[in-house]
Length: 143
Image (cartoon, helix red, strand yellow):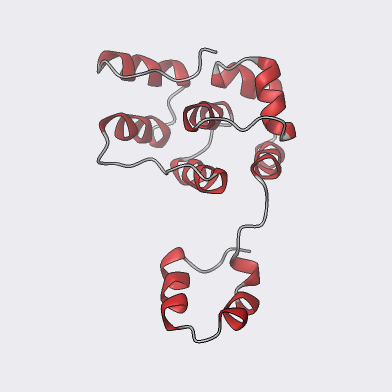
């Protein structure tokens, strides 16, 4: 569902006198899926095959399959690479990072800003890596 913004929810928490009531009223606004469930939902929504995610992320096939099955917990960079494989928007990538417990991409961080630019302009991971490399920053994928 997720109809209320995070700011709205924060405001409600600030004004709440009973957390049980808050949780009951906002049950549909809470993230309840695991990372692997979320990734599989994205895969289904996008109509993409895991093999396409592997190609688009530059990650090892077995590792990607283990992430999607919940057997492996990927690093932030591996998730960002998967975002390129899934052809996610910047907002979808931020949500995926939140669900995984990783920090979101931060526009004030040079590397993150370049990645955000690439996501917003629908660049491939190859193009993104060229951009990162040209700024002497760590590239994505390639494992």
